[in-house]
Length: 272
Image (tube, rainbow, N blue to C red):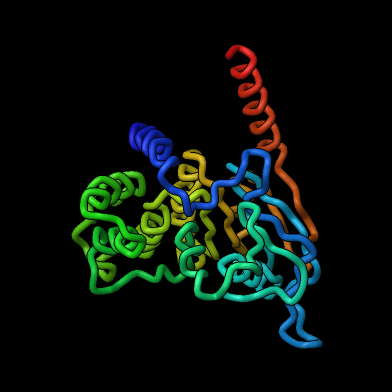
């Protein structure tokens, strides 16, 4: 598994110069920026009430809150399924409101998006479901042959490539969805309740997989109501309640790990 991840990092580095459409932000800029974002469905129905936050390259962030807190609305705004009533949303420095509707599908191709209900093609095998994500972005046969086996190894699906979705468990189906979302190595992966239909043990495995993906350099944002899972992962947490941010913090363990990593980077830079 570690060898596969190293291989993905090297390949992603080689491909970086050729991926002109992908939103690669400068190292000092935010990947996601919400500034005073409001979403009102009516005069009396407000889903988001002026929220602001930034997520930076390489972060793994949980967006948590009870049903109706606004987290799903925030995720729909990110993929431009909804438009904000007020405020500004930027992804890799780009104002989403300035993306014309015909260009939205091209914007979405540069995101990895995972849903609670998997959204797999039922009449296609695991291999074909993942390959389809490359085909719709113009990937050729050679690219598909190279990339699909790699991502299936990373997600633990090497023995399931000829299976159809109805032959898989819920956890396996979600792994296929993750493989499909990550096969293009997007700089940003967002997941809306990715473990909502799964048992606790399977959920842990899915979160660990998302963490491994994060370790390859992809920024990950996960919306979930499963607070116990969030506590186990010990990552940054943004909590919403009635459309407002009531908490934005990092666990002590996460902060210590980040501090150690930053120190190591500074030391390598000084020695270089």
